[in-house]
Image 1 (cartoon, rainbow over the protein chains, first blue to last red):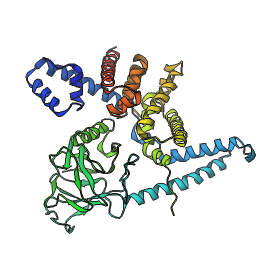
Image 2: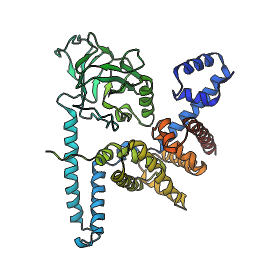
Image 3: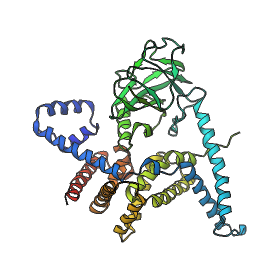
Image 4: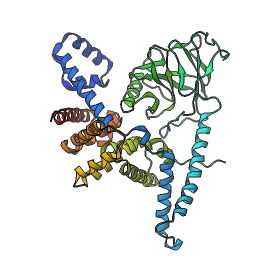
Length: 293
Length: 163
């Protein structure tokens, strides 16, 4: 019996449960007709993504959110003034007023943004672009925020085997690394937390670093953990940009779903460098590396 | 004490680029996308005064797609809009602009609104569950609709490119 096109589509988008995925794979291996049908769907799928890319704005034309927020505040202030006749302001402010308003709003907005970054970064964070996700109501982490420090060592050096950082360095956003270089993570957890670490490269391949060969995220107790604690993870040969996500959650996270969400998120972004973490009831730390020979 | 950043400002800074991208895909016009992005966030601001928005990204995407589609539906001279859009993307090659025009023509003129809407939510990276939730559909019927919409787009686009 042949697979119907919708099942093939679900297979393409990694939406099938794992047992159904295996069944389809076995069927595809021996059925030329379904194999060809899948190839056609894949072609359509690629055409759709290329089409969406063609109508997406180039990243550099997207206005700076801080300036856009300042403009919105300015607009709100103007609307408020117009609604309050007692203020007797002219409907159209002079260029001086406009400039003054921009500065008035831009100042607090920028400082608030900087404060937010500083508050979230903590003293040892991996990157200036770490972007915490707001957990859903009722799932807020209490008593502090967990965070991770990524460490690396070049392939010639042995990684630290305990919490001694003598031969490793703290990874920065956009860090240049090579295949064979070694990675380790320090996870600082104020309370018991489910953790999941994965990365996605330019080929949209997702690699799970933590947990290994398990279907759900790893539950770690409060305190400091070095992961992996007795050896290290070695970077593979795929060159180019690669983005890492470190998920923290109060509840177990299904690895397959998170992988799919990260892969889906990359569909609409040009590169792992610009990729935003998927939203959900978790906190995410994120950074990217540049793998070169 | 440093000034606290409000929930609204947090949503704004986090999702502004996403909202802009979503609007631009439909409109193809930088200035209009910026104006409508402001409108979308003003709506979020008003909504937050009354209720909590649990999934801000999905909420914003839905409002952005509706706003953009309403905006192009309100125009009688769509060709004129496409001409304008072409001027805004002068830095792109003629071929890139041509492809973009053809994609928009198929998505927003050849396909029915419901299909264009679905495809834009999908293109914005929302999950099947999130889209089904937004549109008040069962997940299975939503995936069936999305499947049909993708096929409809693929064949209409192929036809348009062959002409």
